[in-house]
Image (tube, rainbow, N blue to C red; front, side, top):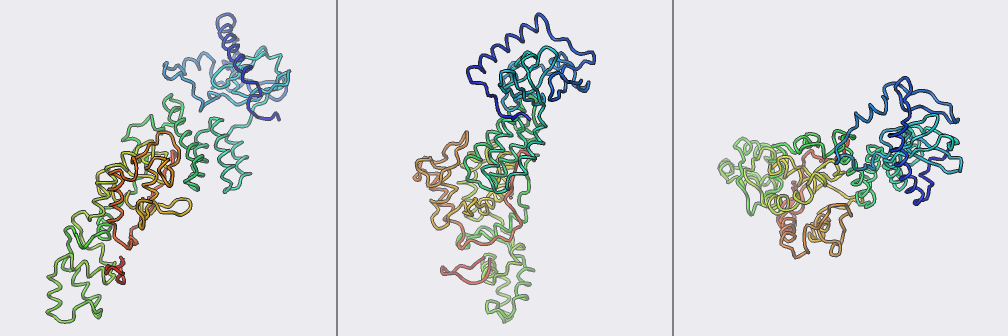
Length: 464
């Protein structure tokens, strides 16, 4: 088989051929267009031997029918490199002069062969064609190539994704690039390629040739329906509030009477539970925040879901106002970034963005997300060094650079920026030691294919 490498023509020769192709195509169209076969088909299947050919199925239609079907507006006529062969079967031609030409086989007749190369018709004299081969479908070649690559050979997989992109197989390319990005979130080349492919999918969609799910074809409401929506439930929201309550500045709390009674009964014998009737009656009348403090000291996590926290704990309020609302969603939660189908492993919910379900879900995503080298986005000991914040600084000031992706711009001017300082204040407000939230929640992942109890600590607090 002829090697399926790219055009071996020199750049200058290629330009001359392109101009020549336009001239010939225009002349042929006006003076002597090729006659269509009797069955109405204008494209023939070919074998490796010159001149041996058979008619393709009638459902391909004539060139004139294709032209009528594929009429475009001036805006749509902009070349789309993501579909280099315009849907024509991929072929390799060996010319008599030894040159190899690679393109989409648009037409083969007794007198001429027409290839589509980068959106341009290249007309070749049939007598100059020594050999012509149709290549297997790109999906078949992809499976063969992929079977020879180890799952952890990310360099080769990224090269494979680039090859798929060049072949116009954008869905497969995005799948491969996305898999590499999932395994190596800090791989700049993977992220750059992932975004490039995503933009090409969107461009293809605008021209009506690609996936109906491409971003530019959908309204925000339609797109949100395709994105994950495994946000926290209202009960989960309440439970997270319980974990994050600051008893020095508590919001309104309700510990029902029956919860107090069962707490006393279940923990009878614990030194923290009063033994006399009078003392127990007093406990039943204690302020709710005092009873919650007792629940924390007992490590009675089974009662956490039954406590109702009616307001916002300080740390969650600061996250909502100074981080989530102020810069996280406006800068990072856009459809083209971490709020849409190209988000990869780090996805931020944007549906009902002001709701507690959305705010708290994104809070837990940030808490639980880990980089490829298992680093947290938040540094509780040195909040200023948190990766989440460093990614928002200009590259020349950041200790950890945000991947170089199209459209990215710094969130903060520097570490003295007021928004940066408020974000640091939020991390410092979080309860320490950090509790293990017993909430069934996994940080979501997306793809264009459509996440305390026990002993007192040194500061007199309790582990939750």
